[in-house]
Image 1 (tube, rainbow over the protein chains, first blue to last red):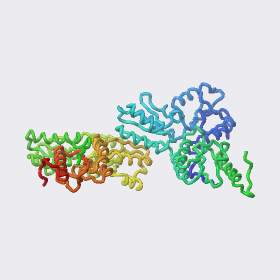
Image 2: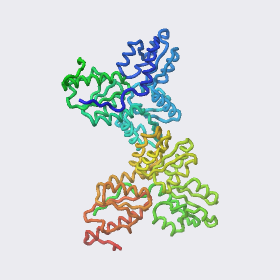
Image 3: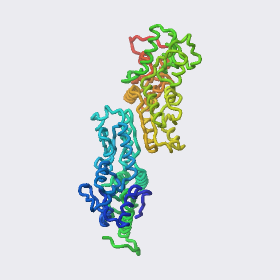
Image 4: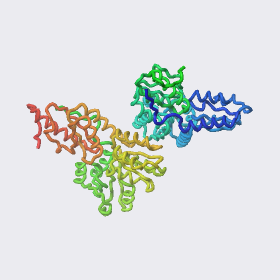
Length: 304
Length: 304
């Protein structure tokens, strides 16, 4: 087997920044810190933080100001109202919101003021989108669509018939091709479309890199949280080019029977996947290789 | 032969309105009227107006207020400055500008005020575009592109590198597919795109109708001025589906050798083509049919 790594993968700027904030709290031995929600979509990292004293909560009522001094806002951001509620609680807020997500907050605030109905392309249940919606004024109609089909449904229902202008933003981890399809489609129906490119550059780069790599390999391993949007997108893209594509959370999900002797193995990882997990995955695939190919004289650790 | 007419073709709302204004001047025997530029792109109609006392000029200096009382602004519109100059000349202005073009003027004025650099998709030498450009403030950068290639050239030159937002309008007669390609392409490069659908509904309808008809016939005749943008677009669309597509200005351009006995003949006409010309074309094709098929006992006029 031969292993090929995607040119760009793993931690993005925003995730690294938030994780660094949390790790620094451990380093300086801050005890009274929690995070609002899991700070990134990666169980291994969340467990690591928990084991080092930084737990998370989604229930502000349960925060006891005597026990908690600081709350780190997760990288996906939160509704404006939650920031207010935390302030009222008297805790100090450390804003770990990805700056690219903050930009989306500012854009929907601005478009709200200018009375633009809004279309958000993304997953309505994802914390990032729930946060973004929290920045839209109450008097502004908004719609969340996950794909072209849902957009077509809205048009068929006559939703856009009386809409003269529409602001469009996307989840930062969206696939540009899908976004283009939707904008293209709406160009036939809406007199003014104000589209903001809110897909972050890291998403662009990681997606471009797997698009480049996947057609050249026999099997692709995509590493990242099962609920990580950007990881799922990487999986979808890779799957288009390479049927033997697998999404794993960490090295324990790998199965030796996926691999064949002559395989070229491509590896990519979502923006919330720490390097240490990527390295463990690579290590384990190397061990599989040794077993499958029965390399003589080569040393390897025993695989569980 | 069998003749099929496109479901929608010929005079659009804007052209009919402007032509009606001019014809009414003839009807009420107004003598001191000229038009600024040819009011529509159709030589036959322009000649008809001239023969009935309504000539055109593009040179304001040559307008003698003693001889000219009223100036009709052509359907494509003019620069704002020209309206000013005509007013200063002391003539009465009858604005024949198509309301859909007026809307583009208002949009670029508004976007200028909001400091949006502008991209205009269309033909830079067309009077409509020259007019639209005349409504952009002097301090606003603007670019006119006729297709994706020219847009790509601009990007390669780094033109958009520092541009954070871009307003996009199109010539009212543009092909939506081309516009979508360009918007799609720019979505990768510009953080905010504010696109206004300025293709007029008549263009949409005429284009959709020939797209529907062309694949079902053996030969397509597109009637309209050689310098009529929307006619050229109809020709291009038809040509995609039917290789034997011809662009004619009037019935005199028809050639009998284009037609075969069993042909299904499709006919469409640009938005500036008067009905009387369409009818003459149909009449002449029927005569060809009689000659080619040698219909016994059927009466027809002799073809020149």
